Image 1: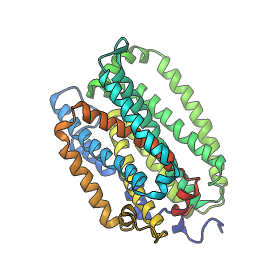
Image 2: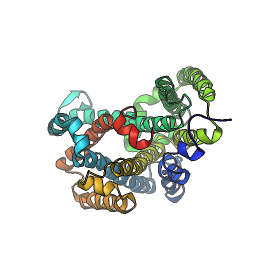
Image 3: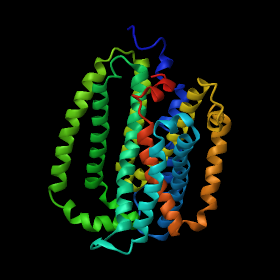
Length: 365
């Protein structure tokens, strides 16, 4: 079968098969193996001291990786004149307003907006919900980059909407399966136990099964529509594999939620998000700045040599994370951490859009 999409099968990969699979699609697997078999957090636990210590270790490792990847956004925004100039006013005002708002919410955390809900709880809920959106949308963006490289009809906005629907109904199905079959795994975390104390009565009787049935029907419709158009693309299997394997890695992450419970699933998804982000940024930066030899800025020089500077930048940020360990319970650190979380989500939404030429060109889309 002759394909108009590319001259050879390798062109459908973002970089190379080994790199795409090890650094993007399945970068989270070593962490998953360590957490489940090394620490024994397989989802069948109680609220004992050993579990708490193991969960604390896994969470700290995930937070460290999250800390590293988050700061790459600020490196790109404030270290690259081209990126900064596109929304200079926004990049100046957003940190001022965000830190002022988060600081005020922390300072007024003693106030109860409604019984049991403080201003700081609102910040945590917003960040938690936005984080879920953010991590799934990053996977969607990379999936669209693969579609843009493969072409054959997959690069169209219509198929982009079908990809988006596919990912979100998969997330919805994962949530429904967890609530029906893995509610017991919430016992391993204090906040999760409090949540289940409220939601537990709602999960008894036929209600969860009715919800699962409705979600399953929705999933079947979306999957069938997506598959019909996916098969219609004029591509060889070798051109489809990069995109399909990345999609399979996403489904595998959702499966971790069901097999080992939402706590392990959330940690693995967060680590996958962080590791793939660092790899993607360095790949993108190398392609972008190698094609712009006139740019001699510091970030441009760093990004042109990812094999040297990726370990140096990540290592420096890890050292900073460790150095701040004694301050993690202070108000200043909490405002800094939550503020940078919100800014990272916001800035990523501004700078990473595969449909824009500034992003598409270095990716070969």
